[in-house]
Image 1 (cartoon, helix red, strand yellow):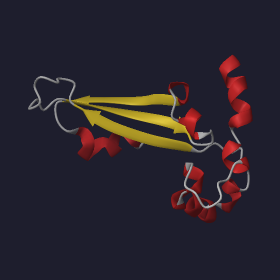
Image 2 (cartoon, one colour):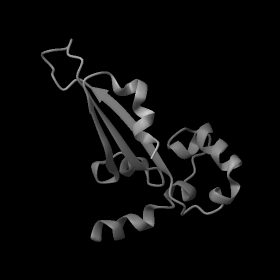
Image 3 (cartoon, helix red, strand yellow):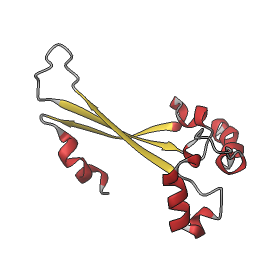
Image 4 (cartoon, one colour):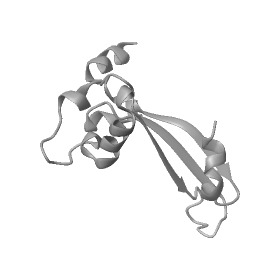
Length: 114
C-alpha cells in the first residue's frame, strides 16, 4: 500500500512535464500523439492509465544454442510515470510466461488475446 501511495502523484507526470521538441519520454513520440488524436475522450483525462506491453524470448539452455526450447516473457509497464520509474522493477509486471518446445513468436497472439 505504501508504494502505491508514492506512485499516485507521478501518474500525471507525462502530462505535466511535456518536452519542447525533444524525444525524452514516450509521451513525446508520434504513436502517443496519434492515439490521443484517435481517442480524444480518453486523452482528455491525464490520469487515465496507459500501459505498455513488452515481450522477449530467449533460449534458457545457454550451452545448447541449437535447442528448440524457448521461453517468452510478457511484461506490462505503466507509461504514465517518469521514464526512470516506468522502466524500473517495481513498475514492470510479469503478466505471462510462455514456455514451449518451439519458437512461440509465431503464435504469441494466442496467449495475448484474453
